Image (cartoon, rainbow, N blue to C red; front, side, top):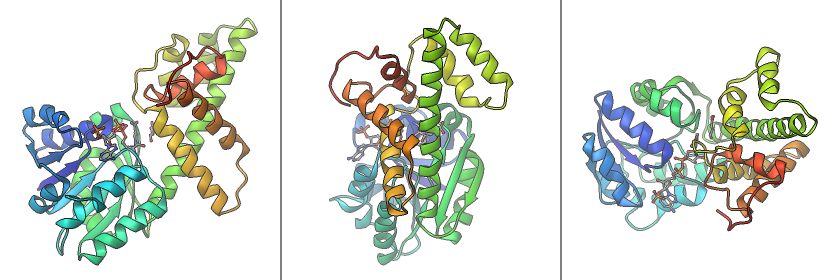
Amino acid sequence: MEVGFLGLGIMGKAMASRLLKHGFRVTVWNRTLSKCEELVEQGASIGETPALVVKKCKYTIAMLSDPAAALSVVFDKDGVLEQISEGKGYIDMSTVDAETSSKISEAIIKKGGSFLEAPVSGSKKPAEDGQLIILSAGDKALYEVILPVFDVLGKKSFFLGEVGKGARMKLVVNMIMGSMMNALSEGLCLADKSGLSPQTLLDVLDLGACSNPMFKLKGPAMIESKYPPAFPLKHQQKDMRLALCLGDEHAVSMPIAAASNEAFKKARSHGLGDLDFSAVYEIVKGTAPSGNAA
Ligand SMILES: NC(=O)C1=CN([C@@H]2O[C@H](COP(=O)(O)OP(=O)(O)OC[C@H]3O[C@@H](n4cnc5c(N)ncnc54)[C@H](OP(=O)(O)O)[C@@H]3O)[C@@H](O)[C@H]2O)C=CC1
Ligand SMILES: O=CCCC(=O)O
């Protein structure tokens, strides 16, 4: 199967690479075109624009930073809409809000194409290892056709119904994750300031009811103030913001998420946006450097 892939950031690069390793023919595009070179070395072809990728491939996947990027790649000059047509499928795996996803879906369908939203849970390593959790919604027939691709990228694929349900599920999950990261940061800080070993706190947590892979993975690096980006903090803040908008729409009060969003925003204002989202710990500790927003 020939697959187009738009967006070769942390996630897109790992996902496109995995598809190549599993025998798919992949045509890639990235806004910063030089980032395509590593994939070309692995056997990918380059499409010079999103439109040219869609022209060449029956199915095209996108993995882009945020709603603005997802819309731009579809609607702008040389974008997806210029070449999408009957028989072609577009699968957007970026984390965006339901409104963005619906706009894209409507435009694609109007041109005769089919659309699936399919945001993912799981970060850089699960993407490299094909262990993502895929939260798809939209065109069921396209879901069935693209399952062999999802089976290579993920450990489990959900089909959640009409467009918007995948986007909303992803935002709810990341809202919880962002709040948990803030709770962990406060706990590590409190342990340290009150004379306890943060590492022993992690050991205790890991044996109890709130043991989870995220604390286990991120905790030790946080103690060492190391934040190599797997999930950039600026994207976590975007997801908190979009989840809070969803809460507004449905009149759901979310004070914990709102407080967590403030901490992520503050982290961005201190220039920590490109670090891993666990860098919010620096804000909780009060040790963040002053810096420019990212
Ligand atoms: N990292 C993670 O752990 C996870 C991320 N996600 C979600 O996946 C998506 C991608 O994340 P990730 O790979 O980490 O992000 P990165 O920041 O590493 O990559 C973002 C990608 O979007 C492209 N991009 C940004 N703005 C535009 C634009 N205006 N037009 C065209 N392309 C644009 C970038 O291109 P360029 O290279 O030119 O800047 C790059 O290819 C996000 O929605 C994120 O929330 C979901 C699950 C996990
Ligand atoms: O959106 C990013 C999610 C990261 C993760 O699930 O570990």
